Structures are given as C-alpha cells and as structure tokens.
Length: 460
Image (cartoon, rainbow, N blue to C red; front, side, top):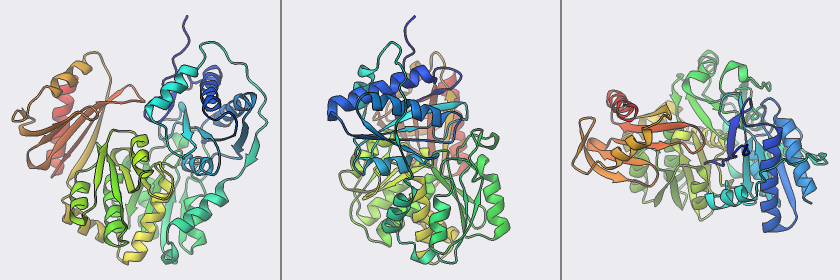
C-alpha cells in the first residue's frame, strides 16, 4: 500500500487528526522540510511553534526531534503561540520556521505550515521541493532537545514600535481570542498603552468552546454582546492561530477583513500618507481598486494564497490583503497575515481620527462604493471541474445571472466581471475539498441572487 500523500496547499498541509494527520505523517513532513533546509542552508536554527489544538505540542516536539537529528538547532515555543509570532521569531536569524496549526479550521483538523527565513509562506516551487524530499517510508522519532523560548516580549515590543498606540489610552476594547493561541497578546499590548481591555475566551481549549476557531459573524456573537454591554469603542476577534481577524464597532456591527482592510488602506494613504503600493488577492473587494485610484496608489492583483502577497510585500508594498480569508499584512513588518497587528492598527486608526469606527466606515464605504461581498463554499463533487470549465468558456457579452459579462480573468479559477460593477470568482480550494465562489454586488439582494446563481450553476 502506498504511503499517505502529504499535500502542501496554499498555506501548508492540513488534515483531520482522525485521518492522515498522525505521528507517522508528521515525522515524514518534518523530514521533508528538514532535508530541504539542509540542502539549502547546511545547518542553522529552526523555530517551531504550535497552536492550542489537541496534541499540537506533542507534534511540535516530534518536529523538533527530526530537526535535531538532521543537525539543526531548534527553538520551541514554551506555550501555544500565534503563527505571526512564529514568523516574527523566524525572521530574527533562523533558517526556517514551522507552525503546527490548522489555523481557523475545526478542532478535528491540524496542520503544518512551513515559514521561510524571510517570515513568508514559501511559493509553490519551494513546497514542491519539500515534497520531493519527503520519504515514503517510516521516519524514526528522535528525542526533542529544543531550547524553550518565550517570543511574546520581543514581538509585543516590536509591535509597539511599528504602530503608534499612544492615543489608545482610555479606549474601551473587547478582545476575543476564541480559546486560541492569541490569548494574552493583543489584550496585553493594548493594556500596556492604557486601554481598558476586556478579553473573552482567553483560556486555551483544544475544542475551542465547541466552535470552529474562525472569527466569522456566527462565531463572535458573545463579542458583539460584550461590546454592547460594556459600551466599548470596538471589539476584535482572532482565529485559532491569530493570523486572521474580524472587527466589531460600538454598535455591534461586524466587519469583515474586506471592510476593515478598506478602512485601513484609507487611513494608511489618506491620513498617514504612506508611500508604496497595495497587493490584493483576486477575491478581494473591488472597492479597494477605486481607493487606490483616488490616492494614486499602485496595486497588483495576485492569486489566492498569502504567499503571493508576501512576494509583493518584500518588494515594497505597504499593505497586503486577502479579504475573503480575513487576512491583512503590512510593509516593514511580517510578510504574512497578522491578526494581532491588524487589531493594533484599527485601534491606532480610531484613536488618531478621533471619531467612532462606524463613522469612519460610513465615510469610507460611501467614498469608494463598497457594496455587499459574499463567500459560498461547496463540497467538491464529481463533475464540478467540468462546470468550472464551462463557466470559463463564457464570453464577453454573454449573460450570467441575468447580467452581461464585461470581463474575464483566469489568474486563479474563473472570474467574471458583470454589469454595474458586480463580479464573481469561482475556484477550487488548494487546502480543502471545496469549491469556493466569491461574489460582490452593489446591494445585499444583488449579492445573494448572484451567490444563488453560482451555486445552481456549479452544483447542477
């Protein structure tokens, strides 16, 4: 029987722990990463961190044992640690980093994310090389002799230098870490700068309180209630490894990264007058294009996967966003999404502009014509690839969902631009057995109608 195939997708390898994610395959994955690093660097230090999932710490020790057996020094975080913090620590002189995490996925999943010495998720050519080094047979475990480290103080000190939090004194903020690895990070940072912080779900829980550790609107109802009850200025939620985020304003309105990212961009270029470009994934709101045009900012649209945005950040981009994946990143910081840094900048923005978040959103959404954005996830089934091909064969001038097709893109999946600024993107996930559709239209009704039309087309 052939060995289980370990596939690195857009952000590492993820699998169910009652299926392929087990000791044997973690050892094989670690061996492949270690052999790649040894071929590229010879020796050096590898940073290993892990999230709050069941057995994540155990899997991290297995990884450290393999790295040690290959001649690398290893630094293992002393507790569950956000993936952005592992990236930050890796950038400080390590040849690579590894995070044992399944990010926002349900508790039954776990995963391994490889981090390059730059702090970025590597491109496909690197993960293909890692796969080529991965053994088919069993890898014997070795004892973990890693140095235990606490990267939190250095990370928070650097974050305080990167963002100006001098104005948050007296702000009332609710932070919800959803029982994940981000516990005590953003809350402590804001507290040190004088904010009044209330932290929800700060205990580590491998079952994440019975929810997926994804800061979706359905999963942050307690945050919304707490913001309202406490009369807070805002609420911030992170996912299981704190690379994703979501925002709630003082009225309890929930904001996606598409919406928050639009406000951040307006602040960076309209208030801070930063100089540089913007990198956005193909499934990010088109309102950002209009913002860049107003401020004379160049932008590049890239394939899904933050590794593609990372390349632009390392080439001078000021801001990177993968809106549908609830992720943003900043130049002169970590070239990967960081939900803790996102929360810090949102607090800076509110403090500096001196008006409530809902007022900022009212202005920004009006100025740049933000409509309604929706994501549809469909379990991958036989025949769906053929339907995507048929979608891609539609021509400019044809009709889809009662609207005229005005443009097409095949950068990643099939993207159709439609009348009145609406658009739809359909692509197969690189990490999960899903087909995802992203739609944007001027109104809620228009977006829902477009989402229904996409589902009917793909699933028929």
